[in-house]
Image (cartoon, rainbow, N blue to C red):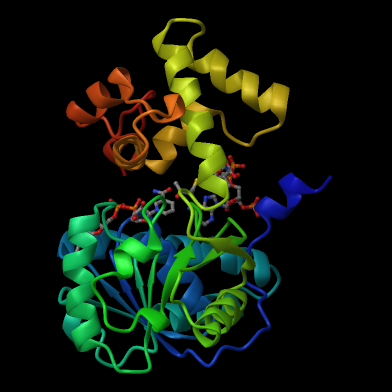
Length: 309
Ligand SMILES: CC(=O)CC(=O)SCCNC(=O)CCNC(=O)[C@H](O)C(C)(C)COP(=O)(O)OP(=O)(O)OC[C@H]1O[C@@H](n2cnc3c(N)ncnc32)[C@H](O)[C@@H]1OP(=O)(O)O
Ligand SMILES: NC(=O)C1=CN([C@@H]2O[C@H](COP(=O)(O)OP(=O)(O)OC[C@H]3O[C@@H](n4cnc5c(N)ncnc54)[C@H](O)[C@@H]3O)[C@@H](O)[C@H]2O)C=CC1
């Protein structure tokens, strides 16, 4: 069993080439910044877009630091080559605040903005107008339907899901999601691009949560419910799953890491669609923490407290 080792290896040694050379990533938060990093590491030209320029400044800083970690490993005995790798990768990443303008020369646009269908629809309408005819549009959605997201675009054949995992530079999986109208050509390009950025790709149907989140989100939610009932302390729940089940993080640590807002967006969306499914019922404690702005690592507090970055 090599799960731990596989999960920890950096995905920087990709050898597969993709025809996609220009990638625009919309959303410069947790996920968008990681996707920008792996594409730039693979030699692609990246434009990272966020409506908030402070977010972009923060993303560039964290990408620089994470590339430094990668360089230390790959160029252990050649620090100068490592510095060059970081500088060249960083130089491939431009930032922008206008999604439409930034998509005009893209071969691929990956959306990683807030998990809200109306906001995603508004964005994709703009992107469909602005991006070149040949460009593929993809969403990194955790839980929404690819068919529903793509309902607003004309190029449904050139639309699919590219679902990465957090932290993107470390987690080696990419779920490639085929919508009902995704063409075979688009699907193959997405698979090839995923491999070019160093990921192991699996094929998913457009079902809620695809594969990983359909299993992981109910597990995290059950852990929150267990804690809410007072059955065990947060720390004991996390220790239990790390030492008893071999997970790298416990479920409450992981919830904080993913973002409690994202967890809530996912759960609320599924509850609305499947009101009878017990596993998707709202969790008062999760709602309370989100209402208090305790979103996990990114805001400095969730189930645990963190140093603000
Ligand atoms: C919600 C969704 O739609 C889908 C999702 O993403 S669900 C979430 C999926 N993610 C997970 O389940 C993450 C589970 N956690 C883990 O795998 C690990 O705890 C972790 C990789 C995040 C951190 O590992 P750790 O051993 O606790 O810490 P640490 O030693 O700092 O890091 C391990 C390695 O990752 C690297 N690393 C950690 N965070 C990193 C980051 N943000 N960027 C780049 N590299 C990072 C470190 O440099 C280190 O590399 P080496 O082992 O090669 O030296
Ligand atoms: N957090 C996680 O572990 C994972 C999240 N996802 C999915 O990725 C997407 C993004 O999630 P995170 O990166 O965690 O969120 P985040 O909150 O860290 O980042 C989202 C960013 O999008 C920006 N944004 C919002 N609307 C925008 C718009 N119209 N145009 C440009 N930028 C806009 C925000 O300013 C913010 O910086 C969501 O769909 C989420 O479900 C997928 C895998 C894992």
